[in-house]
Length: 630
Image (cartoon, rainbow, N blue to C red; front, side, top):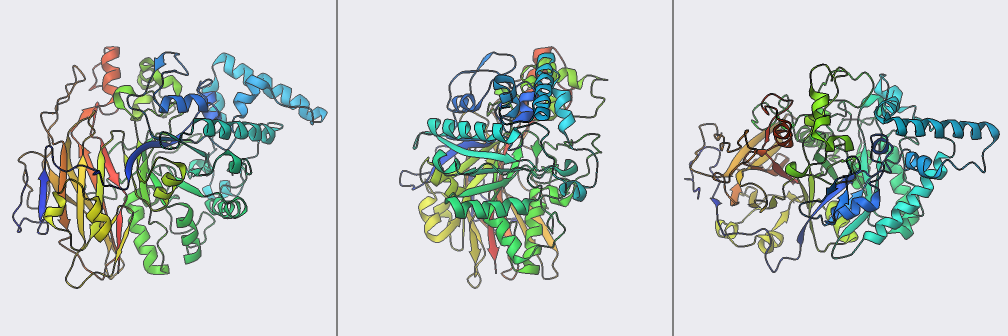
């Protein structure tokens, strides 16, 4: 147990901090909400890039079966695989662009009845070309030909790509109608939720501005629209307008989530629109209406923050991904608009100027797997693309001379992540409503239980209670909520409970990350260690020594001899100024555990310390923020 005197530096208001065995839980029997786990960003063989990269069999039905815990066949090596712990919900978010077209061409051909002679000849040529690509296993080269070419982002955005395949729209409509029916068939309210969705994949000149869109509606309503795609427009505000119109026309509710933002070239969280129009209150409100949550972590890296923007955060350089998705990609150049914590700070500054914060968003993780398998477990990871299901293929990309294109290998990416949702029940409506109110959080794969409430008068006894839900909802706000009008002399106080994943590692520490804006309009951030394992003590600056590392690189095993199983904390902001807007979120870290690259290296007889990337990983959870507004 860690109990600190009231004079401890930077923890002067930490009334209670403890690591407890058999103590507080995440939810009590009286709790009105349950914790659900899912993946909102999973690609099946209906995504053109997945299909061209050898996922020709893991269709939406296979994806749902895997998520529900059934054995399935791997799309590439054809081995039998199974998720370790089933999910509670899944969004099959195939690209709206060329939705199911590649698969349709191979399995059913291009419909030609209504085509003129020229287009019929064009269709025959494309059928032959795609068939040859599949037969010769040259899909990676074909996929690369679809990638954006170097050009100014603004110029590329104004010229959305048109399909060169005759009757592409007809095939997409057919596949969409089939996909939404499959989602309805696998949807079991109270047991497993299959949410209907897709990915709008705007990527002008390699700036990844993708959004995952999902709805709580069933196939009856979803059949009334076709997913909006970047071939119609690459501008996010046009997507928001389409959501406005479609929701009004059909009654459908939607959530659009910015894709992991680390390779957006700074455009995901800019101070103006992609058309160059500065944010005003109308644009900011429209964005926040449709984008209440963002994806902070996934297979292609982590987007919480970067050492350039958080130089005093020792955990800022985590699974940093440095590869743009384009032809002749330039060297990685991180921008403020690429990362979540800088975006949250930027939102405070925008609010000072226009009176509304467009970046008041919650956080989730998901996989972005293109294998049809929502695999976020390092020991049971099946790669970003199907070929990475075989360790030898990752090694081929890594070996000297075989990465001449400067692109990533399978070891450049980790198994990540998951979306955690506090919902009244496991149904489409309840899950979407939880996203709308931002009562959601992210993990990098493990099912770390996390709960946080912000208020003004919580007590240490309440933090030590078996559940903090009753008092948290009664006298405070949950993650994603907002505090305002501070009582005189009070400061924001946070109840925090965090529990380890029973099938994963112990916890190292729990931190509160605060961001705020001063009277001069300058933004600031600080990381507070509020609970930790062992007998470590804070240094003069509030820092904490590493927890240690039990991972054995010779066996790929670790022990839980260090760390704690759970933490409970009551933390009061020691530097609160009621005149300054601020946000607070919890980051919880596991002790180090083996990364999939370590397992691969040992299987291949390689020294794990010599291959690309780290051989161990410190998994984590990020809760949605709680905001204070004067």
